[in-house]
Image (cartoon, rainbow, N blue to C red; front, top):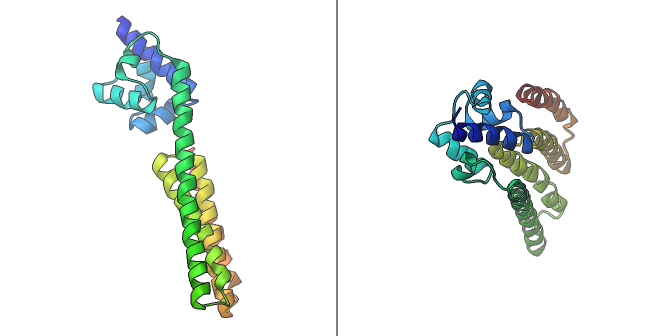
Length: 195
């Protein structure tokens, strides 16, 4: 086995373990099979240029780092942590924007004296909207566990918001929560299958 092929094999295996990923996890992110990843790590085959580029981008390295015998592991982990912190900050900013919109609706309603009876609902609807936002971001970023939690939150808070909206009007539609049971089962089973 050539030195470069051996370096690539060792670096892929080490980076995958460093980021607490299984071969299956890495394969899913690269749209390959876990068998292909296993062959790469054993040095039986090497990834093509596009895959090397995707790996480098995923692990915040250069392709040259993947080809060399050593790379700065601490720097890689630090960059990964910074990227996660930025991601969390962006999610928080999105959620805060949703709550700002709810507050603006509340203030606007007070100023114009509209809907005083159900005015507090301006602070109920941002809850499912926030959960939905986190669900979408989790789906895009492929955060499986967060996706299942956020989807569950979206389901139940949306049903709660509908119930409270109808309760203010004078309708008691508690039966709407029965719809949530099979939908919650679907969310749990989907997470279980994807895990």
